[in-house]
Image 1 (cartoon, rainbow, N blue to C red):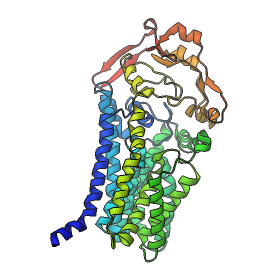
Image 2 (image 1 turned 90 degrees about the vertical axis):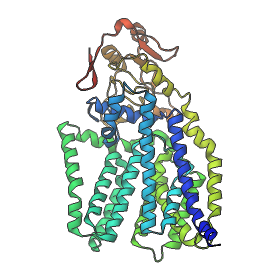
Image 3 (image 1 turned 135 degrees about the vertical axis):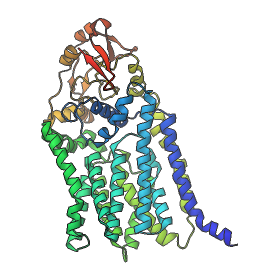
Image 4 (image 1 turned 60 degrees about the vertical axis):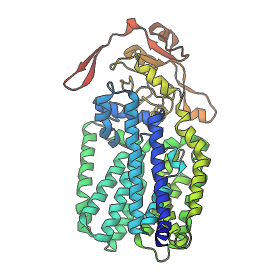
Length: 503
C-alpha cells in the first residue's frame, strides 16, 4: 500500500511540526492568559518608556544592556502607556519576543536543512530546540530573544555566502550580526570567535576580501553613528563600563549559584551534540565544523563562567539541537523510525509541566511586584515620580527620582563600585522629589547578603517619611505621598502625545 508507506515516511515530520505548533500555542497561552510581568519584562518595558520620554540610556538612567530593543519598542510602549490596558501592552511586547524566538527556530530549520542534512533533519533541529527548559524562559520581553534571532539569521546568510558567493548574503549577515550585538552585548564572545573563523576563511580565499570590506560598510557606518551619539552625550565611557566592566561583576552576586541547573533534556541535547561531533565529524562539511566550534566555545562559556538562568542557555541549546538533529537524521532515522524520540518528547513535557507551569504561570500570580504595579497605576498621575523598592521593580510608566532605578541594593552597589555613578542619598531624594510611592525600609546590600552578611546601603529616615507619607494599601514598607504635599501640575501635550509635569 504505497499511500500508507508514504504516510509512514512523512509521519515523523508531521509529529515534529505538531510539537512546534503546540509549543507556540502554549507560549501564547502563557502570555495572554496569565500575568506575564517577569522582572526582565518590567525592566525593558520601563526602559522603552524612558527612551520614549526622551531620557537617554546610561546618561539619565542606568542600564547594563545595549539599547536597540528599547528604541525599537519605545514608540509602541510610549504612545500607549497611559491609554491601553497595561495587560495588553505587556502581552503585546512579550508576544513579539515569543514570535522572535519562533522565527529563530525557522532559521535553525533552514540552517540544518540547507547546509547540514535534509528537510526532515531541519524540522528535527527546530523541534529539538523547543524544550521545556526553553519554554520556562521564553515568554518574557528580553533582548536575548531578539539577539538569538539576529545571530542565527545572520549565520544562515553567512553560510549562504560561503556556498553561493552572493554579496547580498554576506552584507545581510554582517548587518544581522551587528543587530545581535546591539540587542545584547554578551554575543560579543561568539562574534569574536566567528571573526577569527572569517579571518581564516579570508586567508584560505573562501571569502573575498573585497566582498568582506563591502559587507562591513553598513555595520561600521552604523557603529560610527552610535559612537558619535554616545560621544555627543558624553556617555561613551559610561556605556563601556555599564555594558562590560559592570557585567563582569554580576557573577559575584550569585556566589555558589553561578551556574544554573542542567536539566535532563539539556543533558540529552548535549549528549546528542557530542555524538554528532564524534560520529559525524569525518567527512563533514565546513558548516558542520563551524557550528561545532561555536557549540564547544559556548559550552565552555556556560559551564565555566556564568549561567544562572535558563535564558543564558539559549545559544547552547540551539547549537546543540542542530548538531543533534544531524546525528539523529544521519545515524538513526535512516534505519529506524523516531518513535522513541517522540515518546521521550511527550514524556519530557509531562515531566516538566509542573516546572513550566510554576516558572511561567504560578510564580506570576500573587508575586509582590506584579499586582502592586497595577494597584499603583490607580493612585498616581503620569507625571509623578515613583521610587522602586528593595530589589523590586513596580514603576513602569513614571519618572524615576534617581539614576539607579532597578534592583536597588544590587545594581547600584556594583555601579558605584566600578565608578559609574555614586549611590543615591535616599533621604535627599525623598526631600527633593517627593516621589508619590516609596519603599521605606532598609535596603540590603545583595552582594553581602549572598555571603551571609547584612549590610544596609540605604536607610530611610522614618521621621521624614512619616512627615510626608502615609502607609500604602496596608503595606509595612510601601508609602504614598500625602495629598497636601503633591504639588505637581500634569498636562498632556497633544502635539507630542506626551504628559508633561510642572513642579
